Length: 387
Image 1: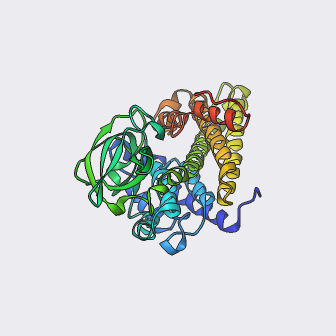
Image 2: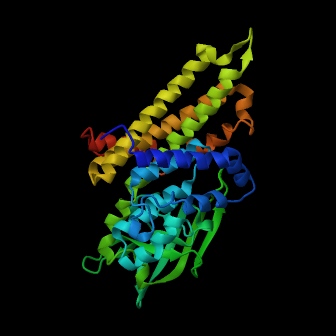
Image 3: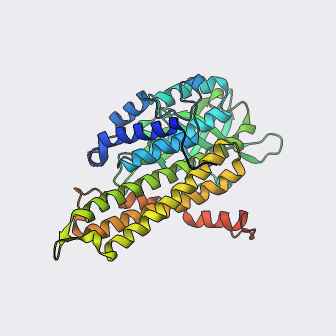
């Protein structure tokens, strides 16, 4: 592992940073408050090749890895434009398709994911089971040459922007009679698939939904992969990229908040003409937050490097740690920024309080900090499973 980016990765970081700053946090908030999406930013990022950096070149992508996608996620967030669908559509769906989809599925979907003309969202979480796939209530049953899906999903991001939903369901194994997970590519306009928007206390242009699947019929080729055996490995294939890119977004958001606060505290002068940043009561909390963000960035880099090297087990540990560290650091950075800005920190103009909901959610989703601690205790410290 090296701490230095390659020249190509440096160029990518600089280019994405420039793109993000041309749009900025004001654009992001304006879209969110108007109930609109970041369509222009997404389309331009796709045209420039940033959305598909981790997709193989034969399908129109950049041929890079999660390291490159994490750079894109972090730099857009550092410009005040954290795009959740980069995680959902590109990190999760594209990775799962590339690793476990059929060749026909890859040819059909990956080029559109790479250029931004297509989005695929991911549906695993349920009202009762959460994301515990052992307890999922959504079931797929064979129906002639196709499948019938029935169930409920919740907190599904971006359904209103996507052409397909990658639905995690359970199917009956004919050899054992037991239910096993399988993934299905379901068109968002499929008969029997309905949605209800969830009102969230988060300033975001990307919406959350409840999904209802009532006898949703899909053809045989909607099943991801060559057979039902692809279900479990496909499900796990998306977990590490998800955690790493969510962490990258958190680190970028933390950088953004610290930068905004540092600019303010270095120039704001009261009581004798000294900047408020000259006081340790202001500067030390900001410096502490900056240390935590930088530590999280190092773990993100480690996790992405391990993942791209094919070391999935080690990447799983590092990815969970990165997500934990970045979630805590981002929440600390935004809260600290609000505090040192004082009343200005709560205004829309200064653009930090608008991120409070998002960074708080980052300590919960896509996996809570407590479940990460369970994972580390069990798999790193050798403790008995606690749940």
